[in-house]
Image (cartoon, rainbow, N blue to C red; front, side, top):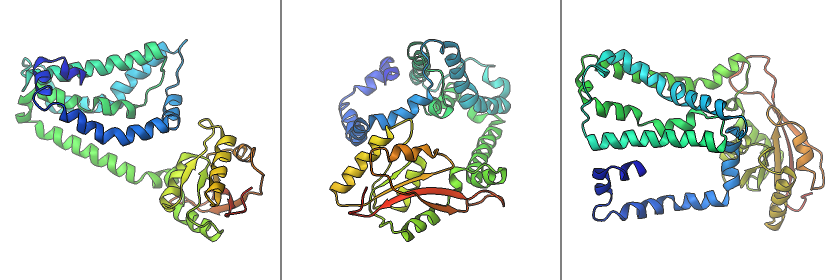
Length: 319
């Protein structure tokens, strides 16, 4: 928006008659999301902030290097290699002739503002780690900006090579995502997609879980997996490092008692240490843990079983 407002032609278009409809409709669309975000701000931001590895004192050089790594190898490098392979010197043989000079200026200023903001996060906030998936949505229009400045490349004799290269890479990435569980299993490194979610849900039902009482999991992956299997239940995670586990579990227990429901506490031993249970039961009457062991999906023979520990407290029997 700032980039568009800084270009006279784009600014006139944005502020033309009826301009206020755009922010009004946009506000109506995002308002529910904003309301949820404000009421869950800690849960929504704590994980990302911790991954930023904020180091105000000695993270400047590291942060700038990680930013460069996130911008070039993780987002733009592959596209740039395809573009150079397909069009070669056609990128610089002729002067730039943008289809729309005003929009070209918007693109350039947008990219400049994004890079300036990212650099500011390093210099002023001490951010020393950037994930490529964070930066990619901000820079996904870079190829559009490049081709809008070189419209003649659309009719270049080698343009078809570029299309084939991009389409091939898209298929490779799609296939790689699809075979990820098999690949992880063959390597002996169990992935989250290898967990037997259907069998776990069946085992919990067989153990007496009613399918509607709140579920408190030890991590977000397990919580999400059970949320899909028990859509009528409220599911949350009391994750170490993100929540004060004793308080989190005690609050869920109190609310379940007030609503006349049971409570299911559950963890997976391949991710959360056993000490999670010491914290989870620190402010409630401790009970004996129950175990469920199930084979992982799509793994090689000899892989240890998936191990889940849980406490199911039916209505009226909560600790």
